[in-house]
Image (cartoon, helix red, strand yellow):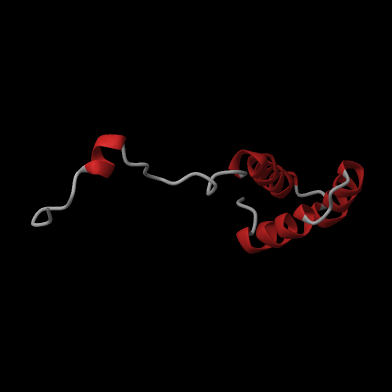
Length: 76
């Protein structure tokens, strides 16, 4: 049975606000109860968060020096 994604998202969002690992674990114990699949889903989301940091810090496309010096067609 799939965990309720809305419930998982709500638990995930709340868990993100808890910086202390022990306190976060205690919260997850209470929020997920005996639902191991829900707990596993929330934990996978939490583990993925550090991997996302800096994702938007770099531009998706960075022109090369040659591209920066070439003027668009029709311009001199």
